[in-house]
Length: 329
Image (cartoon, rainbow, N blue to C red):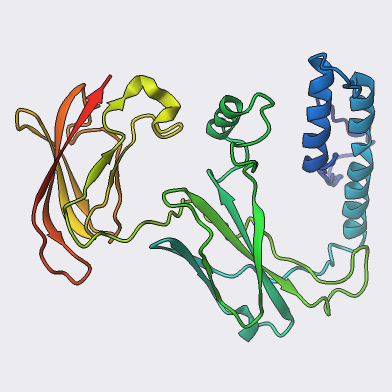
């Protein structure tokens, strides 16, 4: 609940009053909140040995007022200086390119424009663009009873994965999982030479919010040199299997071991064409959400994946292929 009040003012006709808002946020760190939150949850559930009760939790949360006061003090300091505050350097323009088993990042060369560039910092997030989306939270709760971690032990956050020198303008992320979505941001950190007085001195970092990607980047397996080993996963597909298919993407089918280039056509067992998918990205994978060309969800039944116009990486033609798969709803 927020309550705002101003005045009273003794104004006559033509008088004005300038009201300046300073909005601040403060609190304990996310890491502390997660660590102590698990301890409090153990106490709340009555688990043996748990002692971090409501009173201790409330006392810890109340310490967050110190960071709020600090934030507002800094805002007042900046206002009293007429907002004459040293700004960080602008974030570089970022380009992300998907590749076979890697994701490549490249950015503009700020070192050529700003002599005080010291280094670049690279951030990455798996899963989804934002923290704790509904899909991520549902998956967390399903996988772990404490609701705090993913199965691999990593909570999905924006994390620093590398720092590179001022004269480097690209980075290859080889530590990626095939088919997993990733998001990136690149910030620039100066040498601190412009920021020698004030509340906080030293190097400044540009904002992660300026150039972080909003569309997922995924690595892929390079396309196969033949059409002999094409598979559909899962096969058969059971709608009732839920998370045992592809997590929250309940209707996703994956075609694997594809050639780099081909046309994918999906037919019913009676020969009706329901979906045509151009496969042109050079990978061995392609997804289908089971939505037909008529914008209908594919019904239960036997289907045929027909791969035609296939070509290898050197554009040599490859034989056609037919793979049978089953959908059960």
